[in-house]
Image 1 (tube, rainbow, N blue to C red):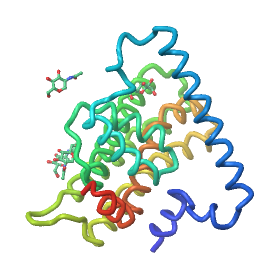
Image 2 (tube, rainbow, N blue to C red):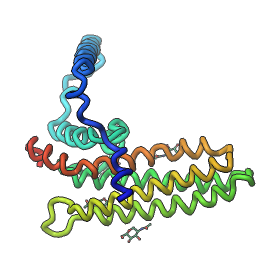
Image 3 (cartoon, rainbow, N blue to C red):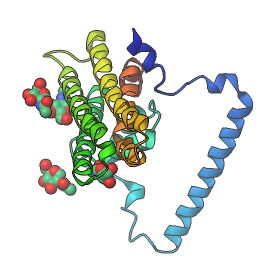
Image 4 (cartoon, protein in one colour):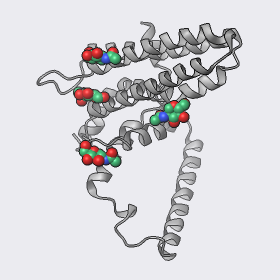
Length: 238
Ligand SMILES: *[C@@H]1O[C@H](CO)[C@@H](O)[C@H](O)[C@H]1NC(C)=O
Ligand SMILES: *[C@@H]1O[C@H](CO)[C@@H](O)[C@H](O)[C@H]1NC(C)=O
Ligand SMILES: *[C@@H]1O[C@H](CO)[C@@H](O)[C@H](O)[C@H]1NC(C)=O
Ligand SMILES: *[C@@H]1O[C@H](CO)[C@@H](O)[C@H](O)[C@H]1NC(C)=O
């Protein structure tokens, strides 16, 4: 299956540690230095009286830190863990320590970013007097509509039936196909502009960056779903 090969490009390679002991000690040293730096900075902040009392950030409620831990675990399998974490943690919704639930949130964010990109594309086309690019922009509009509909379908496909606790292999495979198709739609839009040598290429590429990263994150999460089930069970998070 082509989609499987495409998927291998997403997610982290986890065997760096075993293969490169030297690199590992460098990483440890860096991690240690960062830790020391953070401790110092934090000490300075408190010493300088920047914090009103002990109840701000440093002693976040157990619920908030459990939510952050779940998100970090899930986002840890992606290529863009920071954008993954910041977009999901800023959602105003209840959080469950459940990888399927968090995965579904990531699909929702992907769709939101894609519809923002699509809106932006429509505005760009309206204000563009670059006749040269207009055909390709029209294609892009259609492609982004298709991409949104694929993602919308992937959210339906991620719903669990009654009594179902995990996503079946069949569902995961369908979701991967749909999200990959949405990513391909975006790429095809960029290819069209590139072939024309359109002056708008960079602008459109920038505008699609967030949705591209978020879809890549969703693909990485679903590709690592079985690992995530295990992590959440072991951590007592399930
Ligand atoms: C978050 O959601 C709650 C309930 O849905 C709502 O009352 C609150 O105003 C929302 N907060 C923000 C910042 O949107
Ligand atoms: C997934 O998220 C969407 C909103 O993006 C929501 O409508 C749907 O109920 C969620 N599904 C599950 C299984 O949580
Ligand atoms: C998204 O999917 C739902 C459920 O399949 C459907 O009712 C809705 O019309 C779809 N929305 C779009 C914009 O495709
Ligand atoms: C929507 O897209 C525009 C253009 O890329 C960007 O500046 C803006 O931050 C986006 N908004 C959201 C909510 O993602």
